[in-house]
Image 1 (cartoon, rainbow, N blue to C red):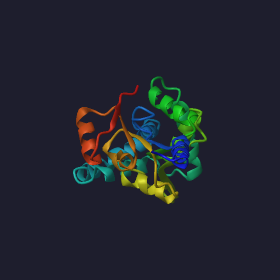
Image 2 (cartoon, rainbow, N blue to C red; image 1 turned 180 degrees about the horizontal axis):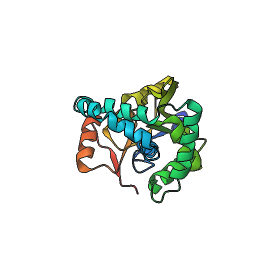
Image 3 (cartoon, one colour; image 1 turned 135 degrees about the horizontal axis):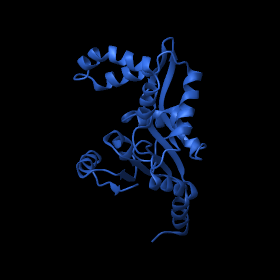
Length: 230
């Protein structure tokens, strides 16, 4: 039997706000938001498309060994000659256009996020999307004040370059760098979110195929909560 002090402590613990983590791509938005931005950059610039075609033989040679290196090269080409101020303006303009696309965002995911906010939970978006872009999108959705831990770019003499790619275990590392080492709920949609999901009492897998669910649950060592969001 609990003492009065024990009951009070339990009640306080139950009433305490929880820390809740949300991935962004595939959870709050359908698709890869930064990839959409990069594709838009190529679509608007014939010289960039031509440069990518000139680099195609090298890209095809490297692809079997490192898909990540090829993707990074394509990002660098898309941002060639772009300084930090210009990049931020372009990211904001793209964010404003993106939120006007029909059925682009996950209605159920945004509703779940807002329910956590209404309950007083500390909500943090932890994503591989680039920081300025994801913040711009969230601001356009009316979520400008939310905490964000994202990938970062840095300015270079040839244009913007990758500084921190916030995927996989790096998501947990970025949280730890800001003193966040415990959370109660985490929402993810891929194997890249396993480290984040593993630290949560409630690990929620969004729109996972049966095969993905089995892989994620094997990595977690326990069952995940499975949800279908649209």
